[in-house]
Amino acid sequence: MTKRPNFLFIVTDQHRADHLGCYGNGVVKTPNIDGIAAEGTRWNRFYVANPICMPNRASIMTGRMCSVHGARHNWIPLSKDHTTFVELLRDAGYTTGLIGKSHLQSFTGLPATNKFEEKDGLRAPSAHLRDAYKNNRHTPDYDLEDITRWDRPLADRLQGDFYGFQHVEIVADHADKASGDYLLWAREQHADFDSLVGPENALPDNRVKAPQAWRTAVPEELYSTSWIADRSADWIGERAQDDAPFFLQISFPDPHHPFTPPGKYWDMYDPLDIALPESFGKGNLPPIKAMQDAMEKGTDPRDNQSPFAVTEDEARAIIALTYGMITMIDDAIGRVLQQLEDTGLADNTVVIFTTDHGDYMGDHGLMLKLLLHYQGVIRVPFIWHDPTHPTDGVAVDDLASSIDISATILARAGIQPFNGLQGRDLFASDPAEAVIVEEDSQRLMTGFDKPQRVRTVVTDQYRMSLRQGENWGELYDLHADPAEVENLFDDPSSAQIRATLTETMLRRMIELQDRAPLPAYRA
Image (cartoon, helix red, strand yellow):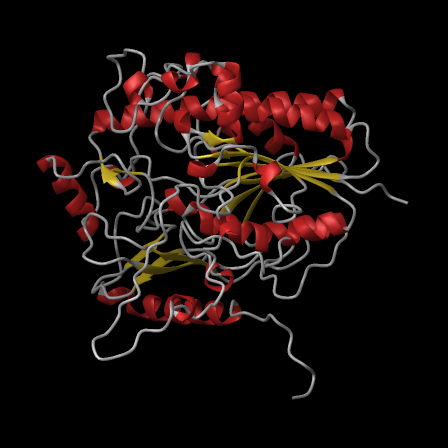
């Protein structure tokens, strides 16, 4: 009988595809990730289902679009009523583990936004019946990642497993503000660990002046990236004593903002060596102009989760710091891969690398994510290395999506997917004609007078984005204009292309309507 493969699934956070050496970046040093790609398969046209953390992570776990699983934005947890591919692995005898960022539930501790409007003259329904779903995911069993309640390890507060993960050691939040199980450990290692974190405790440095950037006092060995690598290596060491196959997801909360690479990674890259994106300072969409005006007038705080405009010097500084975080992650991955080799598990472990979404990183003079679906935000790396089927660095240009990850892993494990899984096995199916990206914002941001609902279709040649309630849209020819500078949406000569893409989008969205639960054969 053929031995079932192990899986090491590596996820980073807010990490563009072109911020890796194997995707053509000649500055950032990522030899370990590049090594995975050199022996495996790399997808060049891999897109997120949603360019926001929680929704896309939920889509990875379920193989389903956000409009189907319902976790449309951060602060909406993945329902425990939804099946995950990890549960199928667990039920098939796999030992399952998650070390690092989960973000399947909210970790902010903020109360749920209640936008239910009571209308004069009508009797309002009870709180239990104000939503189309009676279980609206705001019960205590959806507060497990709430950092304000993290007084003991998540594993000690669980009843059963966590979305199919039998072993969990979790990091919440980002950069040197990372929390969760990791923070409990860090406080044990350093009696006054809290005095090392945040901008108020930063080490002096006059080199970098950019929003959300400070030189953290947290040493490398106590930083969350190191903790994830060490705990993952220990867990793999324990698996060497088992007969059961394993699935381990290791998830780094970097290179997400704030930008705080520790120790030598802080100044590993010189901002003067950083080239600005081709589209920097270009683009006349209403929100871009609004963010640029807000930066010039000083009316945008630029200290939260919303996208913001930056100067050339700020962009170079932030990109350099991001490269430092990425190289630290690459070094950490190298230690985990070495553990696979040392334990004799490497020859039967499929190694997968991706991220939950990208970042503008200076595209059109912007930083962070949300609202505008430029390639830097929606196109992410996806690398697959199977030691029993080496492909020696094959690059695939087929369109693929986050929802395809679960189907591909299940197929390799020899497990039939559940009904309603919308993704495809990337190695045994034809690519879709187009991929759909969904986004449903919940708050106002600079340049908009209302929360945005956006749907994007990407084909081999084009990207088109439509949004509810706005009188403008986006259409770009990715072959002629890969930097997405020339918006063709209102160009009369592109009217037929726009019509064709609209039909393509509609057909793909129909295809992605839910097919669960299964109906009875007869009514």
